[in-house]
Amino acid sequence: MVNEFLQKAGKNLEAARLCFENALYDASAGRAYFAAFQAAVAALLHAGEQHGKFDHKWVQATFSEKLIKRRKMFPGRFRAYLIEMQGLRNVADYKRGTISKNKAGEQLRRAEEIVAEIGKELLTC
Image 1 (tube, rainbow, N blue to C red):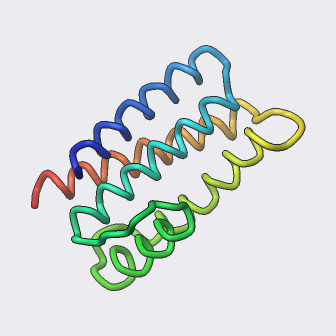
Image 2: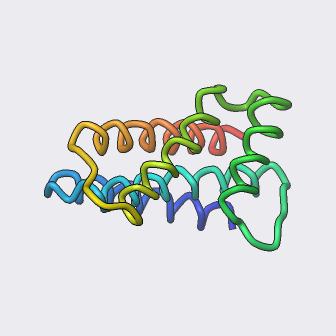
């Protein structure tokens, strides 16, 4: 299941890139968040954390507490990334207006960083 979530993260990251390249910034922001979210799920599964449903709040809290704070597997900034990225995704999907190119680009860069770092960590274990 770890590999499945890493693959989902990779596919969503690619979708985020394609959307960004085609000026679909709202869609890019959403896919970038889900790439980061699914990578975090993969990391939690790899660490032995089980949960019936991988809701956003649980994933963010458990990833932060157990993999960042306690085990120090990932940089502390990833905690803020996940929360802020979900916020931007919520704006893109549920609010009036659109996401700017700059914000979508930052969202994509953060997702790339999280997916790469988690992928690297899981492959070296």
